[in-house]
Length: 254
Image (cartoon, rainbow, N blue to C red; front, side, top):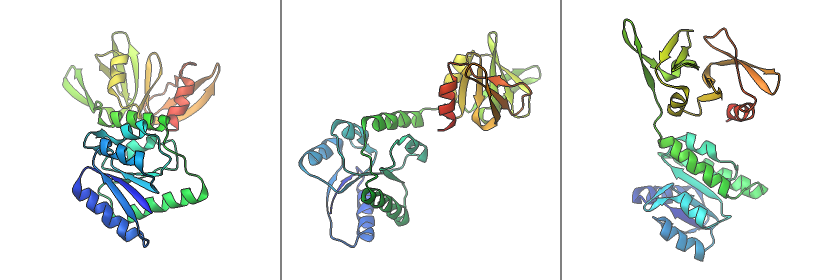
């Protein structure tokens, strides 16, 4: 068995070697690269049974390498990035382990690789997957708003975004409804607010309304390919536009 290890940190590389030694009884050989440049040279000259790859290498992210050099070799990513990043995988043939991982975590990833590969269910890393991973990585590092400062007659209050059920445009400002049904005026337009909110939590269902997925209570079919949405804290139902309904359905299933 021949393995390629892409890892820029020496202690992390040594830990991988220890995990491999424990996981496999058979004799194996391996190559080690700390950068995309070194990894690219090895991939061009050799074939491997599988690849263990960190995401951040010395000269950039490993996605760049796999985008440049196509490989049908199974890949197990070893990363400190949040599990959210890996929701972007559109193939069941790629495993990952999150640092700091245990021997048990490593063994499970290996078992997944072996099971899929033996059954012929392994799908190679493709351009679409790499693009999705890059987008998720960028999104993971982007900072989204945690709270809004609300000016009221009695002073300034803070409204946490996690407590917002929906936001509705109202002239030059917006009204945010919280989980208790209270409304708060935000002196920004809907487009500006939408850009500051996490796209996994908030969706703009039409030109004037945004909903928080955590407070959706019920969804009903409506005429002309629209949906009626019941939200916590609101007696009125909100409605998707016919143009957003398809994307909204996809967003719900993420």
